[in-house]
Image 1 (cartoon, helix red, strand yellow):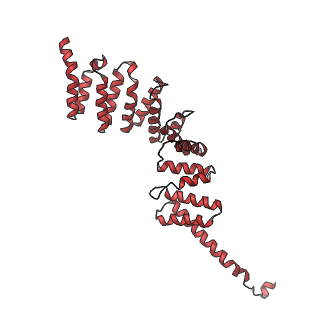
Image 2 (cartoon, one colour; image 1 turned 90 degrees about the vertical axis):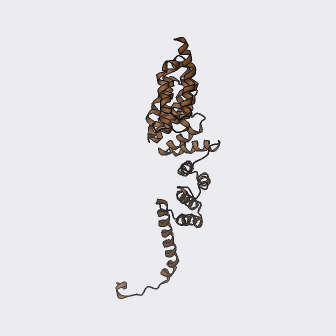
Image 3 (tube, helix red, strand yellow; image 1 turned 45 degrees about the vertical axis):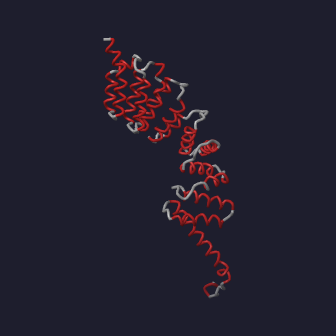
Length: 291
């Protein structure tokens, strides 16, 4: 019996590896579950299963990876469980199982309040809640002070923006601008809007100028630049930005606003041009006027 067990311990990893190489992933899970006790007793290195789960992740079989990581959490000794939470939560996130991400992240937070992977797991949890559009719940999870994690900081900045807390949002984006964080198009427009709404027009201008013509927020940035120029008293530049919006051909709300303002400016300019002539036109006196 012991000889057979020793042979199984030796051959099982080889058989699992062979099936992985043949991409027989379902069979691999069956073998792992059939011999659960061998992994539970530590007779086969759990790191071997980690490699299999990582292979699942690599080829996009996130559901199977998730099951295998969960299997590892359920079977390995308590002092070795922590390391499997992050890859399992990532598998759940990649598989679109946002509810499970929140559930397992909450479980990790409870079991490991000062865990090694706390920041990484919180980041994935916030991502899942945002995907669910649970913005209030996500914002309630944002810690104070914020950890030094650009992902958490960027989500927090976006959440504060969603709640119209432009001051806090602009502060967080400012922190990100001082790091190696790479701003997305949506980051830039939220950063610019947060600065604009808090009256930091010069800083907002610098941000809006970073938004290029391929961005879906290009017209919005041009409209804000037009408003900033008007605040400076430069009506000519303000109208130039409005004209650029029309020239983009992007028919959105901002183009409609630009057209309306250009029409208003044109009408105003016409009235001003003819007003001296109106004032100089003699009034013909009639009996009715005299009365």
